[in-house]
Structures are given as C-alpha cells and as structure tokens.
Amino acid sequence: MARKIVLTSGKGGVGKTTVCANLGANLAKLGFRVVLLDVDIGLNNLDVVMGVENQVVFDITDVIMGRCRARQALVQDRNIPSLYVMPSSHSYNKSRILGEHIKTVVDCLDKSFDYILIDCPAGVEAGFHRAVFSANEAIIVVTPHLSSIRDADKVLGLLSEYDIQSKGLVINRMRGDLLLNGELMNIESIVRSLNLPLLAVIPEDDAIGTSCSVGGYMNSVDSARAFTLLSENVHNGSKKIFDCTYKYRGLMGYFKRNIKKKV
Image (cartoon, rainbow, N blue to C red):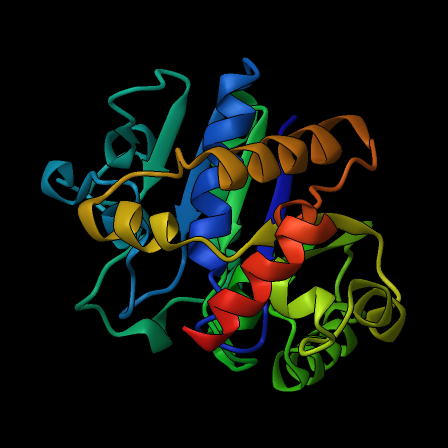
C-alpha cells in the first residue's frame, strides 16, 4: 500500500506545489514509485511546475467521470521513470467533485505506487476537504511569517476531523541572512507555535522561481540539498535539517548578509 500524503498550507503562495514537486522527485530518485496528484481543480499548475503540461491528454476529472482509466491520466516524468503526475482540470465544475471521488482515484493507484502525494488547494474551503479526505499523512507548508503561521494553525484544527495518522512541518522560503539578523520568525518559535515535528527548512532561492517558470524541479545546490534531506526525513523518519544560515556565519558572512540587506 502507498503512503498517502497531503501537502497543505491554508495560505496560498507559500510554495506548496513546488515542495510537492521536489519532494516527489527526490523520493523517486531514492527508488520509490511516486505519483503526484493535483486536486486543485480550476487553478491547477502542478503539471506546469513539472514541465509536462504539453503531454496532458486526460486529467483527474476524466478519471472521475469514467472517460478513461486512472493509468491513462498519468504523465510520466521525462527524467525520472518512476515519477508520475496526474494533472487536474482547469475548466470543470469543481462543486460536482467530492472527497469520495478523489478517494476512488487514490484507491485505484494505491497498489501501483509507494507514495501518493496530494497537492491541496489553498484555503480551507471545499477543495481542502476534498484533498484531505483520501490522505493518512499531512505535511503543512509555511513561510516564516505570522499570517502563514496563523493559517496553518487553522488547518491543523481542521485536520483533527480526519484520520490523519502523522503530521509534519516544512518551513519554506527561509532567508538565512534575515534569520541571523533577527528580521524573521526563528525556526524554534515556528515549531513551538504549531507543535509539529520539523521535516525541513527550505532556503529562499531565486533558482526555484526560475526552474518553475520553465517547468521542472529544483537543481540549485542549496535547495536540492534541503529537498534531499526532506525526502530522507519523510521516508526514514530522520531529523536532518538544512542550515540555511551557513553562508552568513563568521566575519565574511556578517559582511555578506549586511551588504545583501543594503542592496
């Protein structure tokens, strides 16, 4: 049976889809069969992030409506053979799709994969409940900002209504220079506020935006390392966290972070 993990945030714009794509890619590189399921119906972009939007023939709504089998709607990654995407639709009446429909799709994929990663829509409305319904694990993605933390706290309250067996936290877009200068919420206070096991700290990286704009997952050295550690922590239960402040420590680091601040 596959591990079914929903990636959620409450707040939009925290990089949840990017985290989903990179976690999936790194789990597949470890040798696991992985499928990324986009359930953000109407505002889907996982296929764009993965660079497979031109290969899409069927989507999840086609599977639900019986127009194709689940396997037919899967798009294989061009670089990692064990990684697949099931795209969502941008033109379907999402009010007609329920959590039970998503669960039927997930059940069809269950025996063929080791991991099913469910990319959840932003917010806490019907789309959130559709996505969470099929999962038994959850990863909450936040940025080091108070609004993101508050929304994540609301999400945690809603997750308690479901059979979620484990939850973990990913802090995304962390700037090491601002963290050392005391201009961002520190990691310890975020973890304490949400009372969740920390799975990863992903550094702010211009290359993430570039890679996603052209389609594809992260290959920047620092971000790649952070996502590798995330995948290992998810699979092995380890607790290795990327240090996003290492470039800004010491005398040279002090000058670097203060010069960057002025620029």
